[in-house]
Length: 281
Image (cartoon, helix red, strand yellow):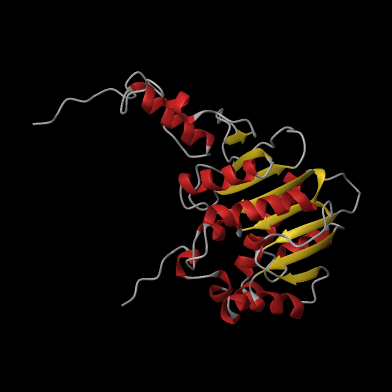
């Protein structure tokens, strides 16, 4: 029996995974509809748009139009782009109010510079980290996506991209290409201690860096802020690792600090951190 991966992006390109059967779930499954709507609401909240002012927004990976419907309900106008014809057909059947475009975000966003006041994306960006053919180079596709996204946004606008990174290396790859394209910002991790409710939001600023929104957390007494920031400033890799011995206390502390910046749950530092243990008999 063939083993089916838990991550959909491992099963093939998105235009094949999101077929008619999968699209039907995003129309009939109340649980999926509720989750998508809540994540769209959170993304819109993180955009920090002016109150009472309709905005023109871009929805990347719009699918069946669930997130777009939330934007319409909040009084905004939107354009959605998706690579799956079946999902866009489902959006047309639902008579969503936004304009729809069939396209691959890894090949760039085909709009004029400064077209949108903001951008949201729900569960789409991680698909660019997988190569489905020899010509697909994840880093190049990510940079093409982020550089074109930076162009189509009004200066000072935000892009909120909800994603499911497979590991810390994948998250670093995504944020590195976003920074290379000119964005500043950071990652906000909601409910970091929950296996099911944990959500990653990449908050990108197309202008000067502003405050990074606070993450949602079930525990109000948790003093550790589950946020990480990044800027376009370069740090020499050789200088950062110079004179730090592998497996030493400094090396362990630096590694744990890096994981904290990426939003990972890491145990607190103690006097035993990095301490060598005696072999057991």
